Length: 220
Image 1 (spheres, rainbow, N blue to C red):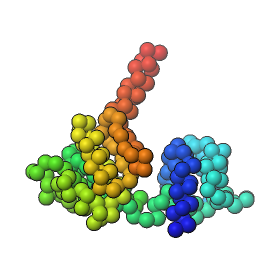
Image 2: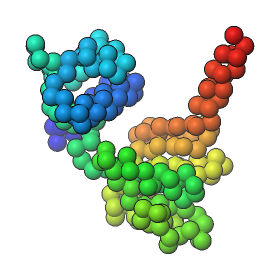
Image 3: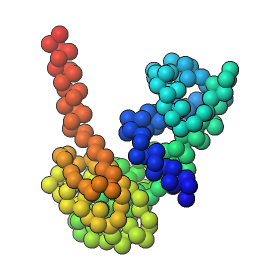
C-alpha cells in the first residue's frame, strides 16, 4: 500500500519527459547486461549511448542514491530499480481496439512481452473478424464485450488502433470499461477524463516532421 501511495505521489510530480528518459536508460542497461557488463559510470553510459551524463545523474537522483563512489552503477541493480520505478515488475495486461493491419501487427510484437506487457485481447466491430485470432494467437472479440472482458482479464491498458472517425467513440467505451491508461495511434485530438491517462502517437505528424527536415535540407 505504501509503495502504491509513493508511486502515485511520484507520478504527480515527475514529468513525462523524465519517464521517457528512464525508459531509454533501461534499454541501454539491457544492452550492457546482455554484453555481460557489470558496472557503468554515468559518463560511460552517456558516451556509449549518446546521452547526457549530468541529466542521467539528475534523473536517477530524484528516485534515490543508486551509484557507488569509485564504481558507478551496478548494471543489474540499476535495471531492477528502474523496472520497479516504471512499474514493470508486474505483468500488465493490454487490449488492442481495432483488429486491422496496425492492431494485428501490434498484438504480435514480441517486444511488448519482453518488457512485461501481455496482449490478452483484440476488439473489433466487424463480425467477420470476431472469433478469429492474430497470427500469434491473440483472440478477437466483439467490441460490445469490452467491459466484461476488461473486468475478467483485469486489463490495465488499452491501445486504440481504429480509424479517426471511430476513435473518440472507442475511447469513451474504454473509459466506461474502467480502463485508466490509453495509448492512441489514431490521428486527431481525443478527450478522456482527468483520471485517465491518454497518450497519443501520431505517425502522420512524425512523418510530416521528417518531411519538413528533408525539404529544408534540400533548400540549403
